[in-house]
Image (cartoon, rainbow, N blue to C red; front, side, top):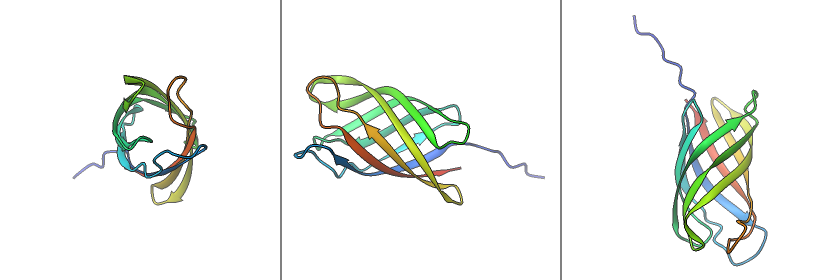
Length: 124
């Protein structure tokens, strides 16, 4: 008999952003993964058209609708590695699929504009 193993892992695709100020890259495509314990890692084309890598930890509410990811990200002109703090809202689409809307706050110095970002993800 083969036993099914439950994994609350999430794989997602970054789709794009809408910046509050003009002049920034909105085609912020990429991919990410989140483990069942909340460890998160991904790669994305950032607001400056550069590649950014990020790692962090994600905490979510019991119903999985709201989450907060804290970590670090590369690829921005202000620093080689910058802090990352992103709140998000998840809307279930059925069969393990969800749309995630994230708020990307403007970094405190020499950062891009605030933005709202859309991702599509699937829990396995």
